[in-house]
Image: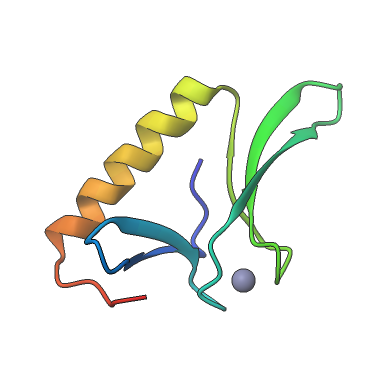
Length: 81
Ligand SMILES: [Zn+2]
């Protein structure tokens, strides 16, 4: 699930880059564990420590980020990095 603090900016080559909406830092991906030990894929801001997204699988993560990118691009122009 993507959290509200995820945003996007455009790199010089036109690629959409996911960033933290608070500090504009690209997120880092890591693993976490929930209450019962289930692993979770996390995307978090290395600067703020805010969780920007959390998923059960790589497939679910990629699908949702891809959809999110399409939504951002449809609201073009998005800000340059
Ligand atoms: Zn941040």
